[in-house]
Image 1 (cartoon, rainbow over the protein chains, first blue to last red):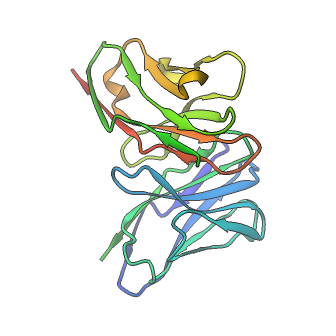
Image 2 (image 1 turned 90 degrees about the vertical axis):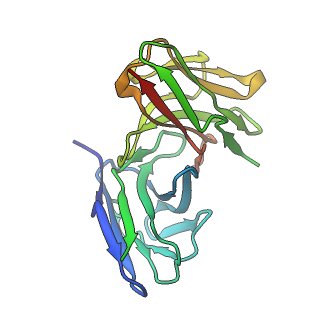
Length: 111
Length: 113
């Protein structure tokens, strides 16, 4: 079945460490997205990419980085510059004007 | 600026009662509108969408929503709620022809047995 796979489901970060969250899709969607979800704040867009080798900052990009080397993959790195990384991270994919499809999320916590 | 407002943070209903979750949007033209549902620790699942045409749209799990242009609203309804409907619900707007979407802050639904 087509879908979006996020891994790992749970991730722990030590102080000063960068961590990378994986997102893979086999829906042949052009666009991919990363959202951060905190209680009571809905979904906030971190980065999105419309095509390979191109991506745009969302509303809260500081402390995060992404790459889009393949259409199927859009990994998110949470850098040590992100001082409050504890959150639920959701990856999505889609095409223009159509509903987004979401993965099951990665919960990141600080050790 | 484009925005989506879900005025109710929490709603509690009894099982079998009717449900209406509110969503208001701000956008210059008719946007694409969506409702998603999220169970704890899970991703978002699409309930229904509105692009054009009939303003009353049917979705999965017995949900429906009505687009009212004059009120800039897209409220979600269900005639009889089941305990399994307890979850968080998100309204979203996506301007046609673009890749960027805006989500509301969500409404958490609690269902009493």
